[in-house]
Each structure stands twice: as C-alpha cells, then as structure tokens.
Length: 391
Image (cartoon, rainbow, N blue to C red; front, side):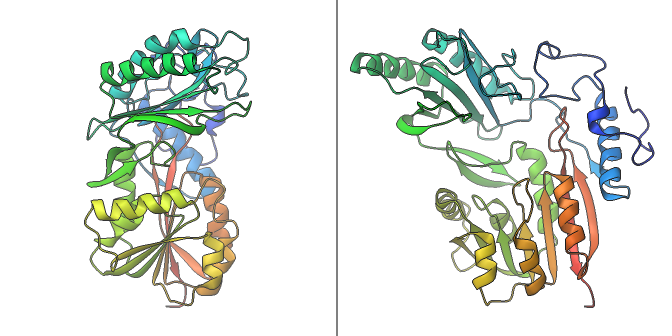
C-alpha cells in the first residue's frame, strides 16, 4: 500500500507495513529486499517515514528529504557466491540474494564493481554456499567529490605461491583498468559473516579521500564513514550549529563531528572519544588534513563510559553519534555530569527515543528532526537537541 498524504495520522503506518508498488530495480522480487521502499514513489516514502517517526516519538517530526534518492551510497558489500558476485542475503551469510548490482551505489562505485566482477569471476568458489570458494567478498568504496575509488577483495589464504602470484597479477591489472586509487587484498579462512579479513597486501594508496560538509576525510578499508555523505553533511552541519563552549564528542569515529564542530563560532575546544585505535589515528590525520590544531581538537582512545567516569573537566556541549544500540551505559553518566546541552545524532529512532526518555528527568527536547539518510530503505536518521532543565 502507498501512503500518498504527508499528513497521515501518527501510528497509522509502520515501515514494515509498506508493500511494493511500481518498480525500477530488476533485483526486487528476486530475493533482494535491501530497498524495502524502492517501489514506492519518493514522496510516498517520505510520508511513510514521517508517519513512522510520529509513531516512535509520539509527535510530528519534520523529515528532511534527500537530494539524491538513488546513487547516494559510497560503500557497498558484495558476497562471492558460486559463479556470481551478489549482495548478501539478510537471512544469513551462507546465502546470496541474487542481486548483482545496486542502484543505491554511487555511479563510479557501480562502474568499479562491474569491472571487478568481470575480472574476478574466474576466481570464484566452486562450492555451493556463498563464500565457500577462494573469493569471499568484494567491498566497493568511492567518493562522488574526489572521484577516488577503493576496492577491498577478501579471499581465502592462497594455497601456493603460484596461486598467490596469479591472483596478485590479476589485482594489478584491475588496479590499472578500473582506475582505482586503492586496492586491498584481505584474507579470511573462517566461516563468519564478515566482508573483510586480515590485511594481506595492498596496491596503490592505503586510503581514499571523501568529503562531508566541505571537510576532507581519509577513508581506510575498515573506516566507518557515513554512507550518504551529502545528507550527512546537511545533518552534521545542522547539529554543529548547537555546539558551544567546551565540546565533548562521544563515539567520535574518524573525527567527522569533532572537525566540523571545531570551526563553529563559540566553540572553544573539542575532545573526541573513540574506542577503536585505528579510528583515533585516522581522526588525528583528518584534523591535520583540515588544518585543525591540537589545541582546538584532541582525540582520546577510550571507551565512552569509562571516559565519562574518569574525566573531571566540565563540558558545555556533548555531541554523540553512537552505534544503533544507542547510548547504553553512557546515559546514566551523562545525568551525573549534566552538560548544558546534548546534541544526539542517531540512525535508530527507537533507541534514540529510549535514550531521550531516560534523560528526560533533567533534559527537555529543544529540537527533533528526521533526515532521509537512506532513501529506498526502511532506515532514517534523526537529530535531537536536549537542553538541561532549570538553567
């Protein structure tokens, strides 16, 4: 069913209730359900998502549409099935869903995948389950701004020097023919559902450069980076406008929010906290890349909750963009420290709402907005600004 009126009553529709109408992707109905809303006209997708947000939050939530409903993703993972390279079936890593390209993927990345798929077809598995052969998966990453592209190829460990040399020669040709900036060869001999493995070799540069909100960021094979850089720029620019004074950026990743916030008028300094060491090192590189001094922006490698337990400095603003699980152990500690403002970005409205409710004894919601970071899918980004009560 389609929801054609933007003022549909709250609670009248859930995203899981939306059925396919129309069509543009050949793989829909062939086992691929990644684009749960792809057969809805985009205006109806927005209506469905607005109704979903209203149901979650109990109030109307303004939803910012995406400028590019297709071709916006800068990363896609493809599993290697026997004789095929396909999107992973959400039902399990041992199955592929039959999709062999994706219209959500940025056009340059789609071209890269097509070339890689043709070149690597000969290296596929001969077993029955997906991932059972030599080639395990392909990850394509790209930047629509810089034009740089990365391919991460994961295989089983070569069984001989000859197999190693033959596959390396194939990758060298692919680096040239696909005009790749970066090509990584990873190995993974396990049966787990992962798209990358242990570093084995790399050709070209180790990273590509992508851009969010006019800032440049180095993206490595395992770097978490916003899949929709254009919409993320809109969301994070909006979020940064609420930062002031001394800022703490929890779950900072590669420093995206910290770096954007650091140039905001009224911000005196930023501390970014991230538990993944590789991301912290990338954040430091990205600060240098964007001309942000250590005096203005520093990064700490530590668990967010542990940092909140141990620091004794007062922060005026806390920015947070946690994983889909939400703030978890951090929210009780935030109530102890009571920053003046919490700016909370999330891609999971349900945990976002749970966290906001848990903070409600001391904070009021000053702003709540939705952002269509993931057109054609059942996912949506949200921004909440919480102000401390009794100021």
